Image (cartoon, rainbow, N blue to C red; front, side):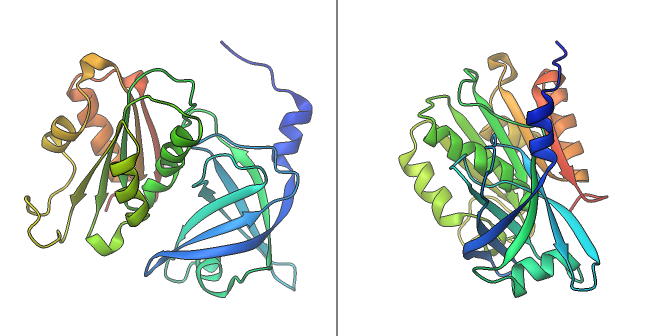
Amino acid sequence: MARAAVPGRLSGRLAWRVGRLVAARDETPSARTLVLDVPDWPGHQAGQHVDVRLTAEDGYTAQRSYSIANAADGGRLELTVQRVPEGEVSEYLTGVYRVGDPVEIRGPVGGWFVWRPAEPDPVLLVGGGSGIVPLMAMIRARKAGGSRVPFRLIYSVRSPEDGYYADELRTRARDDSGLDVAYVYTRRAPRNWPEPPRRVGVAALNTAGWPPELAPLCYVCGPTGFVETVADTLVALGHDPARVRTERFGPTGG
């Protein structure tokens, strides 16, 4: 059913706000989580993203979109940024940007690739690399909202050092009842890992995912090639295409 836009709400989300960095932490050698305080933030849903704009002294601007990593928490936002070589925005945010510095934020953006704690159906999350970020927001929102909906996460990374939120995911898999976490390593697995490096395919989705008969909501996020392959495989396994939601970045898979 189509829904009419509310002018005040829409204009508020399209407005640029000035946020300031209040804390930062490294997730991997090339990825950094930024904790921002954004006054008058309208709130967000797990899975949404924001636009970030940098303005130089000469007036030159550069803008990129980043997924929100945290559950709604007043005016606080967490963004995990992967440094891209020669990326004018990511190199600044992961290197030069310091506590107290401002940055322009617009959003939240997106309404399809979201999960709400009121959803009753089981959830399958499949993330590739930095595609874990909006999925982590869903995991955190599940806990914050007191949801008991069963979640299964399949996280594909090149090597153990490339995984985001490693300590938190380990703790949540142990303590958050109903959350299962499975890793797939594509280039180098940990010592004594029971499987050789591989990509997410039928075996991983059958073993660590949900059977299509349970009609789970499936969220797939990562590089374009990864997302297309996983989504096609889920449909081939019998999942309803309308229940496979995707978010992608970049021109090719990795």
